[in-house]
Image (cartoon, one colour):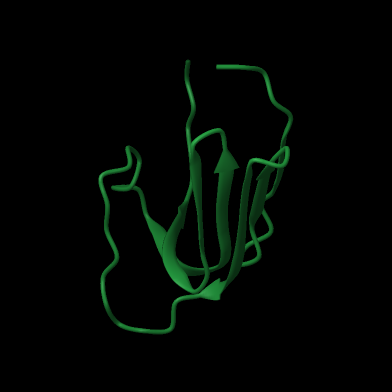
Length: 81
C-alpha cells in the first residue's frame, strides 16, 4: 500500500477515474443492449445503469492489463471506512 492521488469525474455516462499512472477508467456511454450485467462488487444491488468502458487500464508492479468496450456498472456509492 502507498498513498496516491485519485482523480475522478462523475459526469453521467462520461465518468472517468485515474490513479496516477497506474489505473485509468473512462466510460464511453450507456450500454444499449437488454442484457443484465452483474457482479459481486458491494453496492451493486443499488439502482444504477449498465455502461460501456472506453478504457480500463491497470499498470502497477506485476499487474498489467487493458480492455476496451467492456461493460461496467454506474450507481451511487456510500463509502465508510
